[in-house]
Length: 243
Image (tube, rainbow, N blue to C red; front, side, top):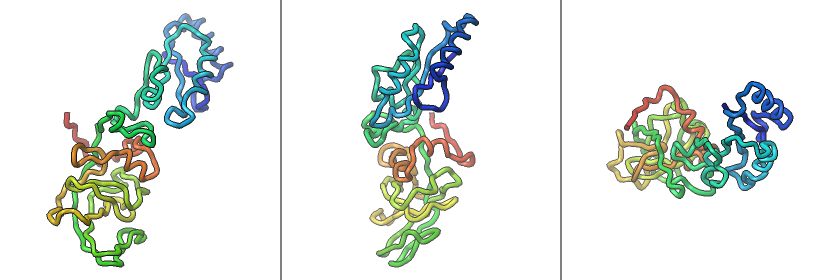
């Protein structure tokens, strides 16, 4: 069993007075020896780090001879000296960095295990002044080719992802244009080979080799974290196990 200490996250876990009572009850029930003490770090992925919470945890644990579980993905990678007896990796299991502003997944030797992919279902030729999508938030300033991808926020792609969010079409890194629709995303085909057209493969995040798009970069562009992308994937998206 796990006995969680609130060391400053102030989400779940026992405060000091509650922890003493809980541990006493476990001892009275003759099962405290099977307990593992745990806490969760609020800033393992931030500049402040874990030391403030770690000190509080250690003061409350009071050198009790019980196993501990402290480290999430960020703590495992940044503070390996405090991993304890059990670790709780999360986002790193998906191949994304828990602190992409500090180190990328590639720098941490993490590889994506999820790829969201689709294809182009239409190509349009725009003239200068033509707008794209709801609200016309992107306006062409030159003649350009625009592709339409069969994916949108109903599939779990972030609706708030702005123009410029990275995407890959037929092995070419490019950008999204305009607002994300329920079922469609427009992409810039400028500079791509003329042969890239309807049916071309699109990677929205994940992938490998020339088709790779880091989920962390998509998430950063959308002002969120890769975990939200992974968790928001809609049930209507077919899941293919490649293993």
